[in-house]
Length: 122
Length: 107
Image 1 (cartoon, helix red, strand yellow):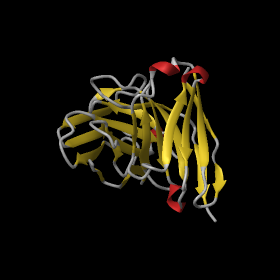
Image 2 (cartoon, chains in turn purple, orange; image 1 turned 90 degrees about the horizontal axis):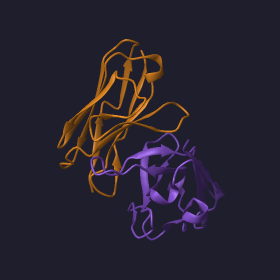
Image 3 (cartoon, one colour; image 1 turned 45 degrees about the horizontal axis):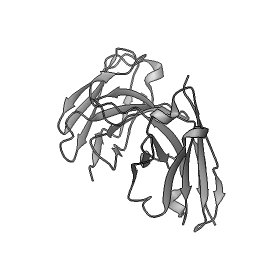
């Protein structure tokens, strides 16, 4: 059974940094691309970042470019999101989501963690 | 970037109703369109991929159709557990984008 568990969220001041982690189990982590998707309180879903299974391809939403870095440690089955220069509007629940990419569908977010809440506030 | 627009944003419905949600892309995305369900306080769940392919375990009352720029999600007979928010998402190209969501609530 696929299991994704995010951690690292919390309250942080604007301009500071935070590192999120996502521990994966129940599937061959090194064989899947992964994503981060966020949801501001009471709002819709927003894709944040993508990383290929072997880290050779990384992509970011415009809102994350230059401030967020996605990475992974396949030996530890863990996905990361390093966030810097945090802003008030980065406040959201951050979900890690497995990428169920196949040619017919391309990226789907086929399994999700429970999310970790990041609150940016002074 | 591709913009996804859903309509309606919200819908008051009843158990047993047939519901159709539409999703429009700002440019052609072929059939690279997925639908997600998010129940209140829960994690999003993938329902349909590639516009019309039902995920394993998803009830057959859910169906999807469309290609190019216009897509629909249909629930043939609403059940109590279907009252949720539904999102479309294009997987044609990054940045991946979601619609703003359609919330179904009880009339």
